[in-house]
Length: 348
Ligand SMILES: [Zn+2]
Ligand SMILES: [Zn+2]
Image 1: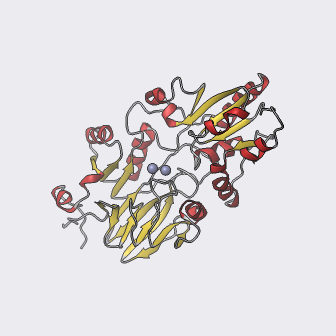
Image 2 (image 1 turned 90 degrees about the horizontal axis):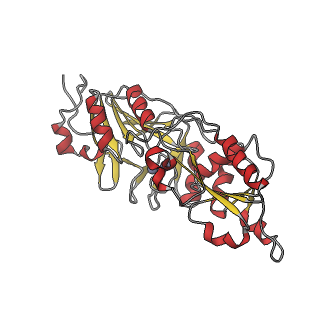
Image 3 (image 1 turned 60 degrees about the vertical axis):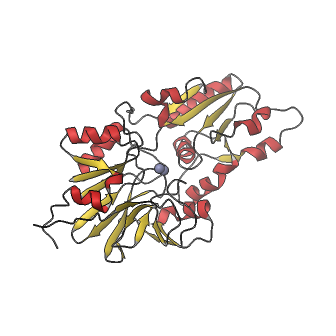
């Protein structure tokens, strides 16, 4: 029996790097070849020579990084080769075009999860469980308190809140991140909303990417356009406004009376302090796996070894107690990795 003593995917100052394939995954800086899990700005950064991402994420990536970037794309589950390494994308259920990256080399399979969630989300492809030897998992909500109810009817809850506010002559201002959360809200409202949702301009172009990918979303109108149509001291009334959290100051004066809400996983149990007092209402709606889904996913990958990214402390000790070998992603450097004992694979 022999084992690989250096990691197939290593942790470097530019992020996760697969030397055998010559590519980075979601690099923090400009590199030659960047495999991108999704278009959120902490994963997709400007300046790399060549990008590779899943097909349904190309438009979003270009909207974020510029139309002129060099992008190659593949379908989910389509194998492609980088150096001697076989690579494929598998849906992460996080936002439209989000992927886990499966990397296979000399009989060893690694999966880097990127951000993922398992809750139903009509705005993107559903999460796929991928078995592997080594799983690199995100852990945004990797603390036991972050657990939320599944299968909530978010669309109906938001719609009812909107209708109630409207009946009191109020506008409803719903804050959510402009990529992912905003479009998920629009997709959940699709069966219910007839009156257009007024969206902030930062959301508009990203929303059009979703529509071009065939996602069904509630009707929308540009908020600024609508405001420009108001005459004299006329104010908006009974509208639902969807905007990123920072945007309220810009158009507060046109609003008349309003109620606010924030849609986020941080509105749940342990995170409730985040929004307490700041918003009139909170919708627990996360684009990341909660504590239970992190654990379920790790078990289902069948990985012999798990490396944890972000907020790793609690999850690592919990996995160890369950008998799963777990480490921080920062141990994916050769000298430390060799001390872990390497993979027990009877190959090479
Ligand atoms: Zn993300
Ligand atoms: Zn992220």
